[in-house]
Image 1 (cartoon, each protein chain N blue to C red):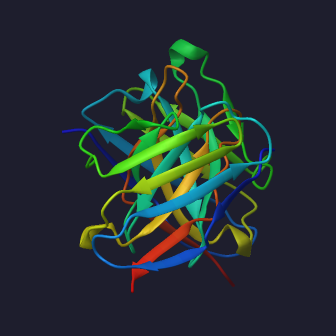
Image 2: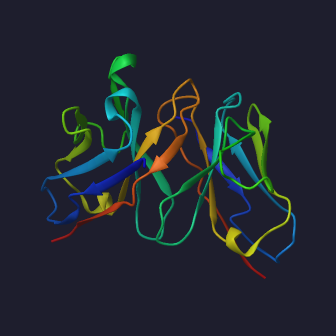
Length: 122
Length: 107
């Protein structure tokens, strides 16, 4: 069964760091484009980042709101996606979802994890 | 960045009603438009991709149309399990911006 399971969320002080993990099963992370999407409490969905598959060059892109602070990466041996979040701010408080992105030019998120909550507060 | 808007922000409807939600992009996105359904406390679920293609396993009462800047999601006969929030997302360019969502609740 194909599945994504996020972990690593929690309470962190402003200016702190956190690393989120997204473990995949049933498919290979490195062969797929993968995204992070977040949702602040009571708000809508916000696209955070995408990392393209190894076959497509493996480039990563970020929303302006997180550029320079967040880094997406993969560990192919663990079939896991990561989001390293530094210099966290109160406005980064959200549920963070990882998602598989369907390729072939469609780029729709066709599988989502259950989400992990990040709270940035003193 | 491409901006996405949706209308209405919310709507109240009854089981069996035909429901239409509109999504508009700030510039042409051709047909790179996806629709998601989200229920409270749950992850979003892909319904429609490439403006009009039905995701596998999604009931045929859901349909999408449009191209360029204007798109619609239609639910032909609303069912109890369809009460949720619906988001559009453009995937023409990075960042893949989402619309603000449309909440569909029970009249």
